[in-house]
Length: 418
Image 1: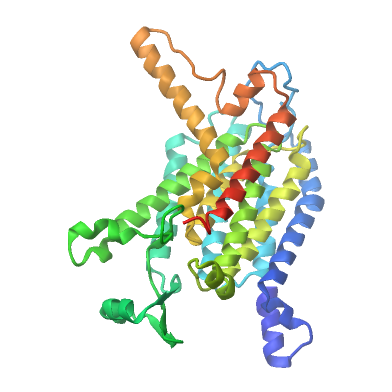
Image 2: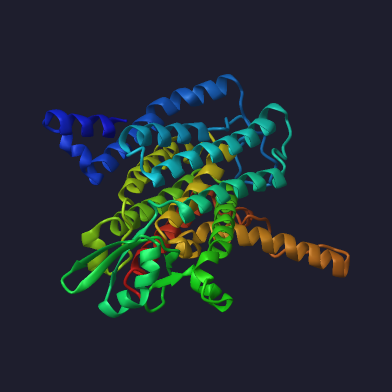
């Protein structure tokens, strides 16, 4: 809203200082700062309200020596995260940008889904919460909305450099797409729809999903949605639930998510900037800069929430926060076309999810074969395994953060490793 107001004031009245709002870096910094202020100052009030209303989730007894009593710690603190994301985004982002519209809708959708889950747990005293199938359906519907929008919306394009030979080969196709073409210094710069994404460690560093369907025939490109949309649904569901499983120790999910979001913000800034994308020889995505503003707000929300969620936690985010964080991380990665880097960047989420899958699968297999279920880990998700090994909670969290930082650095390095 402020972005649109100051843009109008600059255009109509040439107001001094209004031009600052045209800079992505300024608005991203302001979104981060405001998000921190909201989460730190208003977060405290929200926590007091949750305590007053005794909105707590009686955690299952884990049988851990070092576990302090968390039964009275309020949950549903994800509301703090939601407010810290939405308010700065609405104030500082371009609300006509398709990417901003998508992430705002996704924040509200995932927040409501998690809120309903927490509400059932807290107020209806049902520890199972929202049925797993219902939760998955909600995530799948959002995945369809996100995937379909990115696939058909005319503002979702990439800009790439083509040689004269490449342009002649694709000329007919580009004319059908009504692509924007510029001829600069002996090369064609083409802005067009594409299902191309970034693929790490491979020469060329790019993969077009539509080419997977080449075996269909000459019209294979129009069937790209058969690969594109289901993949987006899978990524959204997997990362959202991975973040949810990671939310088991004080400060773990908020800290790891902050590291991931900062990395995605850097990648978004580079991919949305013509100078840096050209220098690094990476895909340039027009209008992507607005995602940096949203990422700034999301980063501030994670850091601000961590102030109260660090050991010993004064509040838990609940599914209101964890489902939202995971889902937004997935959607941002998809928008900036770095979704194939998720297994690396979100390695902590991946390991947490795999530990649960392996534990449950092995237990069922051994019970069926031997009559007695056996376990790979002392407890899953894997952070509880380390608690069972008598590692203190702060030490486990700190080491997971260090692993997250290392994975983030490796993710950025992939920009030049081809």
